[in-house]
Amino acid sequence: MKHLLTTAELSVEEMNDILEEAQKFAEGGSWQPKKQTFVANLFFESSTRTKSSFYMAERKLGLDVIPFETSTSSVQKGETLYDTVRTLESIGLDAVVIRHQDDQYFDELVGKINIPILNAGDGCGNHPTQSLLDLFTIKSEFGGFSGLKVAIIGDLRHSRVARSNADALKRLGAEVVFSGPEEWFDEDLLKYGLYEEVDEAMQTADVVMLLRIQHERHGVGATNSPEQYHREYGLTIERERRMKRGSIIMHPAPVNRGVEIADCLVECERSRIFKQMENGVYARMAVLTRALENIRGGNKYVIAN
Ligand code: CP
Image 1 (cartoon, rainbow, N blue to C red):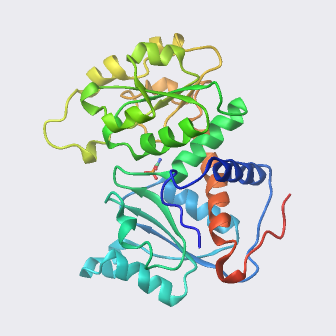
Image 2 (cartoon, rainbow, N blue to C red):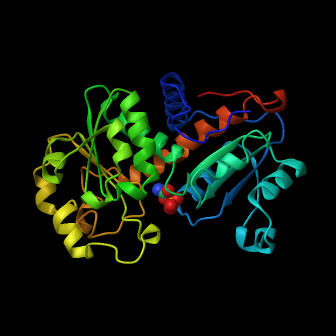
């Protein structure tokens, strides 16, 4: 059984292996389970990309996806997360993908659930598959990570994407810097890189990684109007013109157009925002096969390119 809960639990070698597998899938490689394999996607928090991308990855791998919607499940009757997952395990599922609003929701499952749990985002904690697809996008662009400067900019305090990427990128050899409103800076991030003024960060980075303002996690009295945020911390048309030659723009999306990034830059030449979404399918295929390869001694690669 191989859970994927955080990037921190993956060694550099494991991350590189996953990126290599993702590359094989991007080139048309395929995989099939040797026997019928069942998975379910449990999204307790809303999602478009991660949910659809996991579904697509699962279907491409020939897995049987068991429908599960929190709105029509016994979660509505008060059933706990543990009882929900334990039930699905008892019924015969081989793995579960979970997104949940609570940080570290998986702590109550690990050691008690015997099928792989793939974390599709926990509160403000971690988003390991987003990080892996971001790493895959960066590696596809630059060939590696050593010597690259990655500026992660925006709502750092509430971002599970920032935390997962900062950890992974630093260990893979990139320089990581952070920028955005100081009141949203999280001092825990200093172990991965320094805080930099926004114009300096955007002009000197190879990768400008913008973060969504997570309004749903802000309390009352949140700072900055959208216009003020865009002017002070967003990727404006003027700032894009001053970006380093060859540098790229990333954003995990959904994008607040005209706030974190000027509307017209979302699909500009430097932008890899929709490429990230495409790459998410390959990264999730790699993660799923890694988790499922040894379940009940059954699954192995049978085809690769
Ligand atoms: N990037 C991301 O996690 O998007 P969704 O919330 O739409 O899944």
